Image 1 (cartoon, one colour):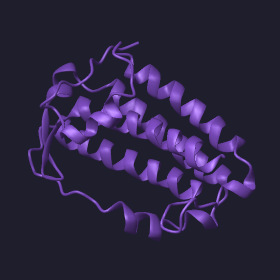
Image 2: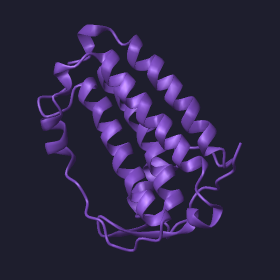
Image 3: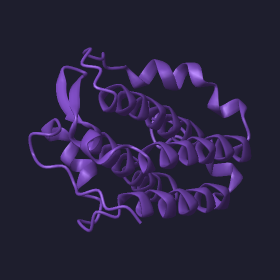
Length: 174
């Protein structure tokens, strides 16, 4: 399995450490991403149906909305990684996750459908990162007004998944 070392400070906006620190330091990020995707698939399919549209506060997302947010976020981060890995230095804008969730209509979909979409995106993510040239992993650019490298984008999206699963376990499945 390919080794991709964790990004160093300066390769990402300092806030992203909350995601990056959730991952081991062994460089086996692609293995972790694959295993975590399989575990996420089982996790979401095991949630009782009555909890899937539960909100622990009026302004919080449902579990279905969180899952689709994770999928959207992964797509966006891989798109950023594609641009930077191909030496495209065009600054990329940020995105407001709230309208994405509002427009997603995730609660009108089945959990099986949402999980399948997530898993399809994950397989594409793994394929993309498995074939990026080594030297492209440390290329970077500006996204959301902050410098970030390709490998930092990978670690960010992997940690983002773990973060949201932890939140679901702590706040939704009580």
